[in-house]
Amino acid sequence: MHYLVAQGTLCRVVAASEVLSQLRRGALEYCVLALLANEERYAFDIVRTLGQVDGMVTAEGTLYPLLSRLKKDGRVTTQWRDSDAGPPRKYYAITDDGRRALGEFTTEWTRFRQAVESLLAKGTA
Amino acid sequence: MNATAHPLVEGYLRSLDGAAKVLPRRERDELVAEIRAHLDEAVPPGASEADVRNALDALGAPWDIVAAAGGEAKPVRRGPREIFALILLVTGGIPLPIIGWFVGLGLLIWSPLWTTRQKWLGALVWPGGWFGVILLTTISSSSGGVTGCGSSGGIVAPSGSSQVVMTGCTTTTHSTPLWEFLPLAVLVIGLPILVAMYLWRAAGRQAAA
Image (cartoon, rainbow over all chains, first blue to last red; front, side, top):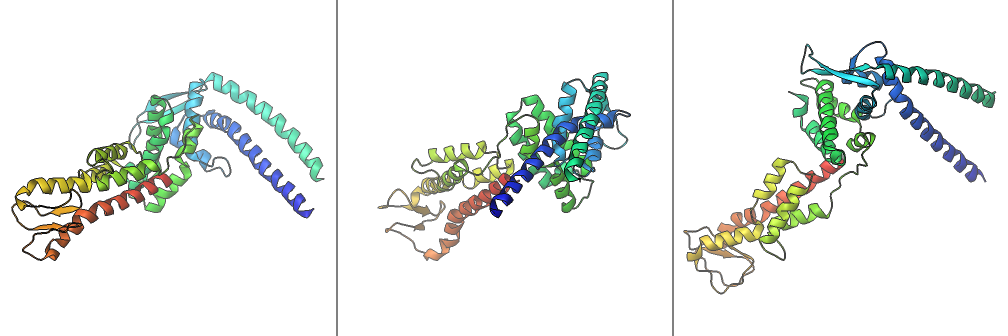
């Protein structure tokens, strides 16, 4: 019986981490857009900034495909600029489309977060 | 030193390029170029090996990156291709002498687990494998007078000398002691085995990277 309870708990823990990794993956693209909301950045800068946030990115390399997808979807544009040191860098800038998407996500995310938090609070009370 | 000149970085980029074969050509090239640029910045000149390893760990596994790009990348493993490549190259081809070696050469070139330098090494030690060496020395020392001997298993001294050392052969004609040719025999037979062992391990390292 104890074994079954323990096993059930384990299953739920695995599922929770899966849910969180899906959430993270989905939210990541909007975190990139948020980083670009006020300034243009080059790829390495974006990747390093996100990489330094604990629990946000597990493999920095996966951000590069994400950046090209954002570009393909028209949410960012890129432009090569000379750099003081080394080869030219590709700078990413948010588009109007990207800004709109970021605004929508921010609203929805805030609602979602508040709903989940209030319900979770009931569970722990 | 440029980061991408570091052997670990080079190996990583090669794995990535191999894994990214499932992507359209342009996406693949762009992805590899971007990761290369990333490593150039992440690994400062004169960085220690630990710095390089940390930068590569932070990037994540090549096939994870390719998977994020929408490709169903499977990690390349050491398999029958690599095994047959090495066996055929070392022996010179079983059961088809020389032709078998060329098959081995094809497999060697085909495998993504070896560097160009390693492929050259595999191809040049020895061209034709053991059969190639035997054939070459037999032709070049036709004056050596090897008679009454089977077609395989013999190692013949270079042309100009009349001494012949045969292994697996009963009729040997030599005026000098057999042990004088031992180093040569060890070199001819042993070197391909050593090279094959090295290439096998190199492929394993590349597959694990």
